[in-house]
Image (cartoon, rainbow over all chains, first blue to last red; front, side, top):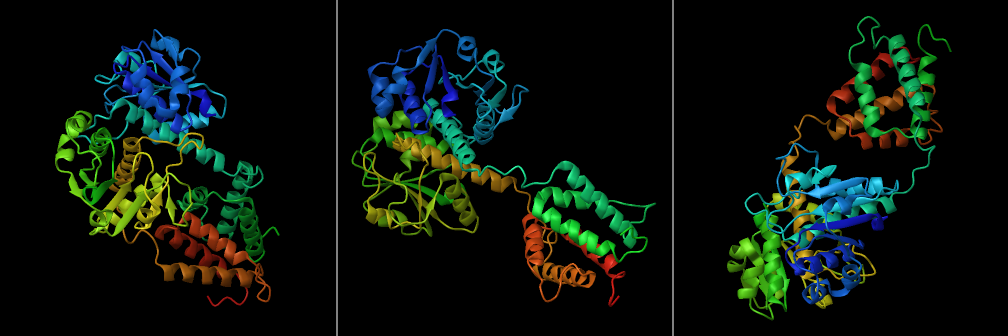
Length: 243
Length: 243
């Protein structure tokens, strides 16, 4: 899954940052690095900083334009140091990790784009993305080193990936169907009307509040069965009971 | 709050990592850096990498032993590259961030300890902590650069800090008291017994399952009031009703 996610570095000016980014990526399980017209070719200094991740560096793909780097991706997330200056949907690194993994499990190719050390991405580049990622840094000093930003976002990708792995697959029959829930609410309302708690002419917000409560808790099938049983056992004692 | 959290670097051998760590800290709003017997004094190279965080570097405190660095802290979290080799309580960076902020708001001084570039912390050093932090890195290449580890943990501290800031203070009267909930469960059981749903001699797990459901949803006061009203309205129709 993580191999569907590529890290794209645009016009990086210091090759050491490319090396450090490669290392950061590999520690988090990412391997695909794309360099858009780097200003300095990654050589000895980049390799030194890549440490055990020289393979990521060696396999890095070099392209001339951002468009080429993104061509086969269906989800593009672009990091931005600015907080909502463009009116574009914005994610925290955590939300970005979750979104990427969510779409990744469905087979999407995903790109995470990082801009220049000094100036980030241009507005035109930012507009080639579906979402912006903003790292909520200290407003008094928000200047993360490029490779540190790669580390932070890669960390969240890995955390989301691990969470998805750990999530026990929910058995399809563990939760009731929508129509079963609707039928429960109908039954509940009927019982409360017969008991006199809900006055048919002035039903008020009782059912809305009960729906909110049970939606929040996400009723499980066995719980719904108990509640249906409870309603049936009470209904027998109510006037006009059809039971 | 973040100023109650100090970053402790033990026997750092490369001053550039001290500089990068200072920058990483400041971008996340942390300012207190303690150096335990660094092998290289932070000078020009560290300052270059600290970039806009030279103040953090200049204010760094230098001590000879880890014990001195931790003396006035009530919560000590030590990073470990090893996954549970010592039998010590272990946290992810996210859990560590949450724990630190939780205790920080209660006034605690907190230390986060990072070991040597090549070999981390010794077992003896690890045992001076309350919890270990393990960054869940790629098992095939888990070697995060020291400053990258500082960035990752500092990021989680900031995320937890921001989440705590945003959390609307819950009004004390929004949630029912424990005794009110217990009284609700008693009432519920009584109604279900009268209706015949619970057989007194064989009560089964009905109440346990209902408690689980309502505990999970965390009933609000107004919801509890509705449910009490529902029970009362039903009880009137039941045999042996005291109403």
